Length: 212
Image (cartoon, rainbow, N blue to C red; front, side, top):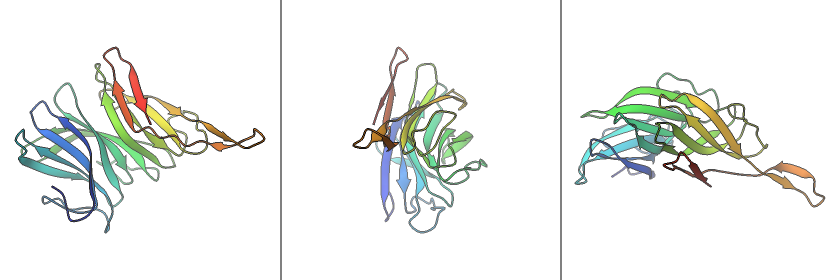
């Protein structure tokens, strides 16, 4: 499935309705969904399949700026939690920075997804989301990379990895940056290091595991 342009599948999950949801990004248009950006710009997408691999629907998440869907989780009530990155305005929420993360809650219908709410977060610099995970208490953890201070967490001055915890309703609870520093031959600090978090998982005991 996909377009005649570049497409990526970045995440997959199985809903309580038995449908298989695949998310990612595309530079093209397919399944009746039209890319909202200029030529070769990215739009996020979600495509649903039944257990036999029959496609049920595709829905784009896009603006005139780039978007990508990087995480899909199923909440306790069966709704779909969608995480990713956006450079535009989603669900009426303006992106007050160059690129930020988003968390969206939606329900599947016969023809596509019905959005319940969308939360956008970021800073005045670029912030990207690469993965998400849901804990047993319904909380969400999102990870990625940022080029600025985020939610009050200290920033090293280059690219920092981040972990953000959100409640079941998308309310941000805390953010922690993972950073390092570079030193010259004299032992003087010259810059922040470059860290990126690409994956996150939660344990039954509430532990959070991050890799990058």
